[in-house]
Length: 498
Ligand code: ADP
Ligand code: MG
Image (tube, rainbow, N blue to C red; front, side):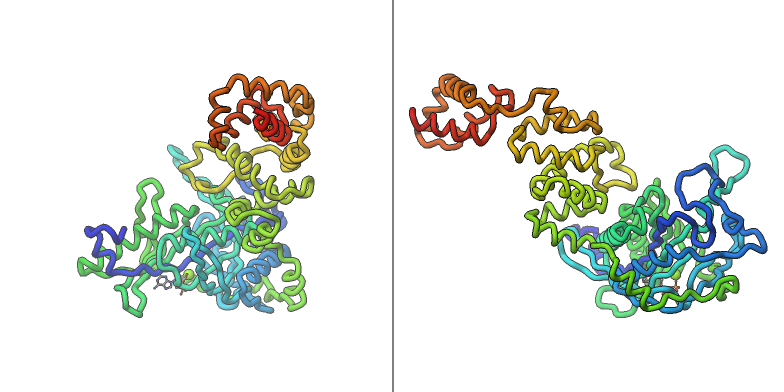
């Protein structure tokens, strides 16, 4: 829908309005109301308690950790934590919902209001108002195995704690929605409440989309496309839906309020149910659960202990000598920021470590995860398996002039193949220690000067960039072991005498 394309001009008459409902799976040890393990990827139906199976007569017990996580997110989003919130039963029939209702929050959610700060690709800052955040349990999973005569049910996910973040319809483009979703992922991963693993469904997003003529103040009728588990799908589903609605309106049709499903393969959505068919969930307060009380002093304690979020970290890293670009890359994932900080504890050269993380560790991580480009993890930076301590030791060896940067690259490649090896051992074994023998270095320099008389003459004539070439020759002849500082001083001295 590029505005530059005249063929698309009909689309330019419209504005897209988007609101998100994002589900965040909490990384608690146990479920929201049962002691069963909350863990992805285990054998089907191995993490199921009687409560999750919906057996009659069993009672739910709220998970305090999940409440703490909800408060963390509410506070991080600058929302108001409700001292007393209420769990309600949301009724619907589906085979993966054994109780016949989902425990959720409706009228009195744990957090009201709030704001999410995010930035567009061009750096422009935006704020998205949050309507509320509520707690709820996840349902199980139906498994439709190809060729099987029946569908299977896996209840491992049943009862997993979720937070649902509902935004105001403030977003106006697919890009804004994608960046807002990305920012929310950053907040929850920095808070340590969610692993942010989109492929495993740790975050899922429903997009509400409507369109209206530019200048119009009333919102149009919206549809909701459910269960998108990547930034890319969020963007594609919005683009598709806005286009569909505009074409429909231009034909004189009307948008029907409905729920739609995104088909990731066909890159299109189809209607699931209309508002007329919408469920009456018959919400009512769950009589098995007391109202949830979170006293102000508890909220305060959680507030005091809130971890540093991305923007604050990025700013602090710049005070350590990182550029804005470095800080942005290092904080792109909380795992990278943690890696960086672990390395800093071993060796305090922040800029040096940042360079190695950005140029080598992330590059090696990206090539290890090649082929994943087309899946939901696309764009997520990956670390390589070398421990942070080893990278710090490697940078320290360079800074202490035990090895050269060039040798360090060789050592790094050896560590990529063998992440458990210590850089100091590899240096010793490979005989990579820098050449400290001034006599030997002088001999190499004399040799380089003799072999490159033409280049030396150019240097004498004022072509200063030849110096780098000569340094390169020295490094080559010393097999990368010449100390660059010594070599530079000795080469300068030698050239002056010519
Ligand atoms: P409901 O209570 O029917 O689910 P809400 O008013 O709670 O509806 O809105 C649900 C989501 O839909 C919110 O994220 C909200 O921002 C978004 N939304 C509401 N109206 C519109 C609209 N006209 N266009 C796009 N999004 C909308
Ligand atoms: Mg809703």
